[in-house]
Structures are given as C-alpha cells and as structure tokens.
Image (cartoon, rainbow, N blue to C red; front, side):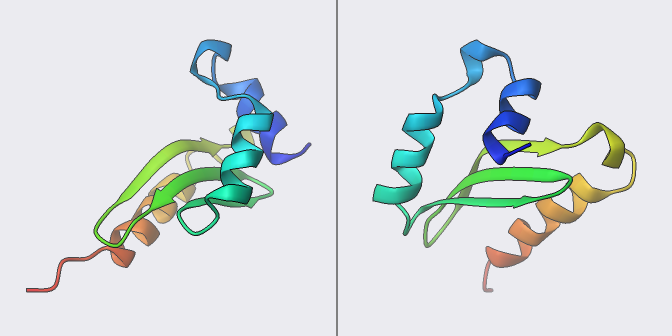
Length: 84
C-alpha cells in the first residue's frame, strides 16, 4: 500500500487533499512541503525556518501503542528547538 492509500483509508474524504494536489505540492514546493513515510507511518508536513506544520500524521493500526507517533513528533520538536 502506498503512502496516499494509507492516508486515504484513515482520514475522512472531506479532510483529504487529492493525490494529485499532494503530488503537485511535493513536486513544486519540495523545499517546504515534505513527506516522511515508512512501513508503519506517513507524515506530510511543511517545514519553514521558524516552524513545522504537520498536515497529516498517520500511524498504522499495527504500530499504535508502541510510541511511534510520539517519536515522530519528538523528531520534529528537536528540529525546531528554540535557541535561548
């Protein structure tokens, strides 16, 4: 199952961007719109200099309860840790 199918099976249709729209963002805005996917997760996000916006976060049913979502979110938090 590809990354879009995983998202599409989990999120309601009214919350989903079309596959074409997402692929266009990944192609034309590749410097800011990004995808991180693996066997048990998909994260679609916007990364700017001063913030990260998570558009979609999916963790597979088989991996839930194992801390994967927390690890993914912590990875993003570490990227944008404020410098004091």
